[in-house]
Amino acid sequence: MKLQFLGATRQVTGSQYYVQSDGVKVLIECGMFQEREFLARNWEPSPVQPKDLDAILLTHAHLDHCGLVPKLVQEGFRGSIITTGASADLVELILRDSADIQAEDAAYKKRRHRKEGRRSKYPVKPLYTLRDVERTLPLLHHAAYEEVVRVGDDLSVVFHDAGHILGSAMIELRLRENGRPRRLIFSGDIGQWDKPIIRDPTATAEADYVVMESTYGNRDHQQRVGDVESQLAEIINRTIGEGGNVVVPIFAIERAQELVYHLSRLLRAGLIPPVPVFLDSPMAADVTDIFRRHRECFDLEAWQLITAGDSPLSFPGLKMVRSVYDSKKINRHKGSAIIMATSGMCTAGRIKFHLRQNIGRPECTILFAGYQARGTLGRQILDGNPDVRIHGRQRHVKAWVEQIHGFSGHADRGGLLRWLGYFKNPPRRLFLTHGEEDESLALRKSIRDELQWDVTVPEYRQTVELE
Image (cartoon, rainbow, N blue to C red; front, side, top):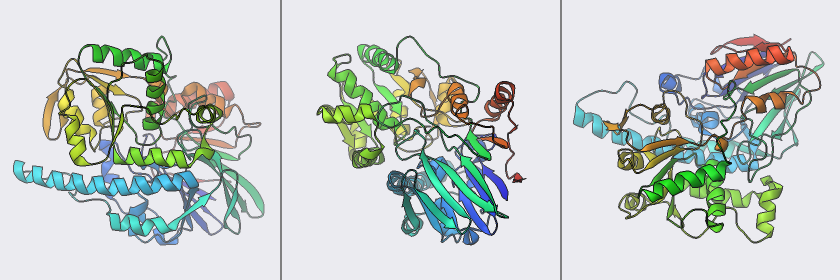
């Protein structure tokens, strides 16, 4: 049995793992690389033969986990794409949106490059088109949590709730090789405990091999005085008091809905003033509709709000913005507002236009509510760069820059160790992925010191024989 690491190795994005066992070939994840230094990998031909794959298994619908699936279909993949029902609905939205954004960005860059008389380092064309997405969607197959799904004669898969975003899962592979049973766990992205709306991560007790994320492998989420809502209210009240806007780069899935949830509670409690709140993302608006359809993923607290007649995902003053025309109108709005727009790492999409309008205003706040990968525009702003490049021009950063760590959809160092603590016996080997190199190496040391487990931080394209 072989396991090859094709992404998210000593860096965060591009999750992809190739498993071969007794003639069965599956890909766990097929994510897009988003760090600037690794973007060229998106354009390389797949290192596996797509037509030979039996299935692609997806833990969840974030772009760095599913964003290259249409490219694989373009290259010949015709097998099944298996994920949870909620994830399947979200994957459709994510891939359509990704194709649209790529087409828009390619057209915009071509115009700008012609005007500037320069050539791009990367091809100025989409990785894939809406036509490729349409060919991908019929391959999607749904699996319920805890359902045993057969992929081959000697391979089954079970999806366990990961508590990261709606529909997110940990993938358990059950294999038989040479008559012997083997169990592999791919954690996907492990969520935090006690988060609103969705359930907590599943406690897993047994596995022969584990591939676990390490995004926050060397950090515990910073706890300022007060909880998430107190911090959010403080930032909003200060900014509105100074006559500015709060601009929030959002991930359309989960972070947008979680922010709406908290803003709803703050407004109903009178803890922030009733200013307009713009959710400027057609996809985030559609995702919110999917949340309402998949209430089977909700936790007890969300159900109690629904039962009491208080929708956790709407409130007076919330404006869902879909059209480009209405998006442009936001920046002509007089008075303060809260503006949430995609993408969450500021790599593309409408958030760049709002940053361009507000980042040079000292009365405004740029508020980050999620992880910012190295090399992204969001990370540059968060790291305190005095000037950042937006739409081809350097912009001086005068706005306040804030981050609330409690919004993160990832477990921190303590949470990751907590999840490992549920195992009855150590796995034969633990592989740490989906984390920057220093985070993964630091977590490896912590696990070796505290649990005495066999831990590896694999390299890109490394292949491991699993005995």
